[in-house]
Length: 382
Image 1: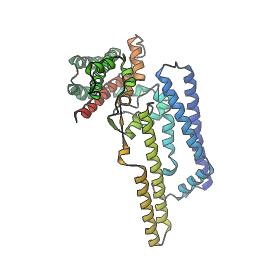
Image 2 (image 1 turned 90 degrees about the vertical axis):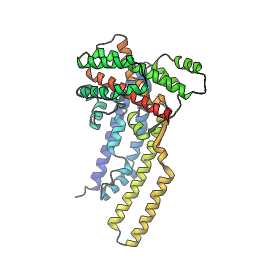
Image 3 (image 1 turned 180 degrees about the vertical axis):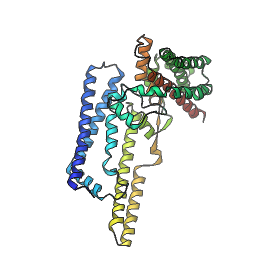
Image 4 (image 1 turned 30 degrees about the vertical axis):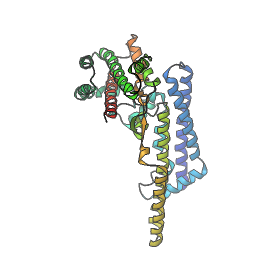
């Protein structure tokens, strides 16, 4: 039995109002910590990104509370005949919830783990993390599996990068200390290893990107930025690394640079096209159910088919699914939370850095750093 139209409308209104309240709560929280955060801190740009994104999401959601959009929602909801409906035209509530929660400081500042390879957590885990209801110690149980992967994959990959043998030895030592339960010692070893391997790899990439410039001049410029984070953010990296936009949207959604602004624009373009095509499918479904005149049905189908092809042709192509990014995006995961942890550790603030989940995160950072360097090696070997 179908729900009465007024109930469908009220449920939709309640859902959208919940999202607005959720966005408002996170806006207030972001603004509160923005006032408390030093201007030079990396958290400032993350908070400002959160605020801007939440404000834009609120504008979009408020639009769907207008009578015209509510009427369309009720119409499509009541006429749906198959899974094609899925709120394609009106954006799913689940999607809105995730987009809002990605702007939670618990998600992209205090945790900052969305970049990790082989994420050992579900969408539900991500929601609980963003709401501040789940601590990262759930990663503890995954540490043994991560150690196995580092032994089997990461250590062998070092040979392909031609890194110094000392790094191999330090990683082995970090693994042994983890196994013995000496987590702080392991973490202290991992930071200089990650920094050393990545700095060496990025130096090679920067030289290759500037092959027409004198080696000494390039070396001097590379070394003029003392920290790895400054090298990643401030050097003039070329955009020569191809990535899928949806991968970037999922793993680098909070990175505040022009490349990711383009990614966000393209993803929105894809979603707009998807919504228009889905409206097309919904109309096809309605015709199948309600049209008895076969010729009229076939003629209408042909028109809808042509419209779908036009939407795809005019709005999106395969080339829009990927984008060229630079080191400043690909290695951005080393710039924020990890850099802060590294500085705290090296300045002797050890009390908070002996946790297993942190060890898991740092081994993951090592793994991802090497994966990215190997991909860059493929770019320049082709």
